Length: 87
Image (tube, rainbow, N blue to C red; front, side, top):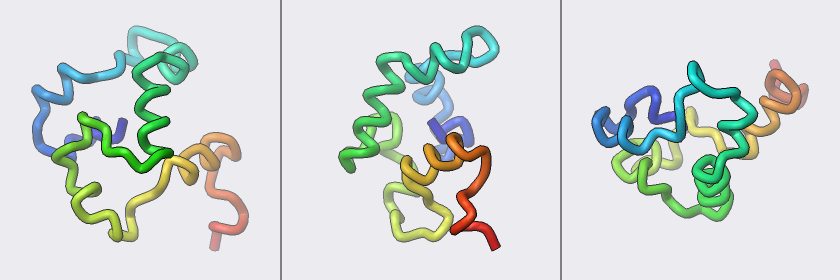
């Protein structure tokens, strides 16, 4: 999750709750892992994931830099922002 940027400033908690290490596993295996699927399901349903509990993005969801999981999935699918989002 985006907590790799350490938004909550709680690195020990984030390390203990990491979904894996992409230097040690294939991205597709990580993406399809149980923890990642549950994380995405929670995002889609609007539930706050425990690992995100102290994140300022959840405390200030109206912030324009916040993107939804659907935005992220579109960017993964198209390789960049869809044409409708490009200037």
